[in-house]
Image (cartoon, rainbow over all chains, first blue to last red; front, side, top):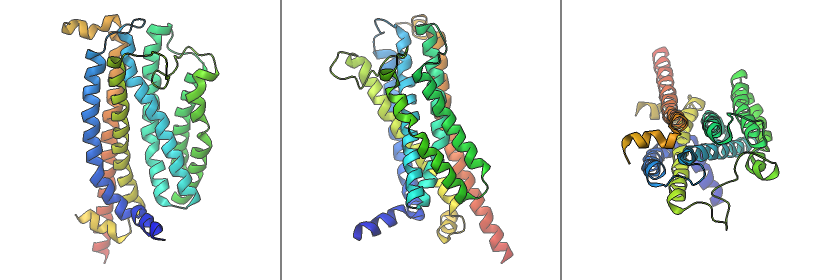
Length: 246
Length: 56
């Protein structure tokens, strides 16, 4: 019982609005403090790769962008499911906020991958499993946003787009395991391949810091978007009038 | 390492720097878009409040 009161207070719109406003700057600045040194480590300190030369340095933005595209989708699908199952408006607000962030980083992952693929594979694009499933992810995000935009009634838009988000989540493991399940030009994961010698620490540490930095950055952007989304949904509530005056 | 060498990136600069530029635009663009979205919502709420106050 006590847990539920606590939970409802936490998820109440005015509380979330204030909490998000309080936390967002911390995540924002922390992400900057991680990303900048990681950039220096990746672009300057790390030695060139023995096979790929300096081209491998694209990994420091490509892999974190791809990670963002997947993590953001999982957050979106889980939030949409929470909104659909428990009829919690906050879930829909979070899901709707995720879509543009995820779409832009999916785009970034595809373009940086293309710019890496050209010098390494000799082609900008091939229709292999990894690239195709990541492209489908972009279409899922865009479809989600188009569906929301096409339905006037907010509750119906929330429900319909939530179903799309949840169904689309099957694509996430397909993307992740595509390089293992199918033959691909795309190299297998550099970070999660345990046991074998993969990268020297001077290459690996900037990458790990970059992953962490991008994750905190995601939280910052998401919190900021959720604040706007909550305000729009709650515009006639009394607390909004107080928040707006402040 | 000279600055020229750094920007040449072992001959891969033409691929590497556009990639970094695009991610930079996406990263900064997301921040600006999120902040603008919040500001818009605040402005809308304020307008609504002002309308309601004047109609009362």
